[in-house]
Length: 116
Ligand code: 5GP
Ligand code: ZN
Image 1 (cartoon, rainbow, N blue to C red):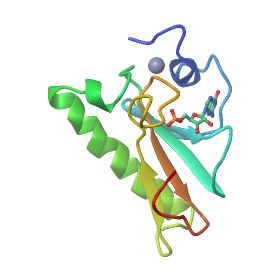
Image 2 (cartoon, rainbow, N blue to C red; image 1 turned 180 degrees about the horizontal axis):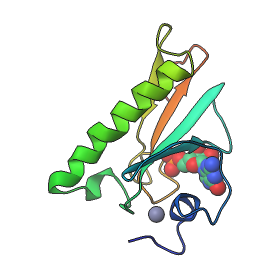
Image 3 (cartoon, rainbow, N blue to C red; image 1 turned 135 degrees about the vertical axis):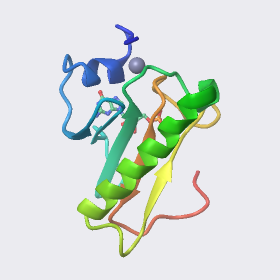
């Protein structure tokens, strides 16, 4: 179920604007409003699940679905040959600020390691 107070649910439902790059019945991908790299896309499940630690059972299949879409988008965005990064921030110390689980697809510049 969508949550009224969740910005990503509102984007998925078309109530809030975002540049959507991919959408099916399970996964939505849209551009991050504050990009940290030339390509910065957020991938979310349509289902409102607060964070990765809240997945149970077959919900984990969504993690694979999201990665399949992420790789497709990385190819479309021309990142596949040079490389890219997929990140999930989980919980406050993991740096999560929006409580609808999401994976970041970042690329188009040399990314540093370790992250801050
Ligand atoms: P987190 O810090 O939770 O891993 O990532 C949240 C991400 O959501 C941030 O990169 C932030 O820029 C992005 N974000 C926050 N609000 C919005 C919004 O309203 N629209 C879009 N497209 N991205 C958002
Ligand atoms: Zn949500």
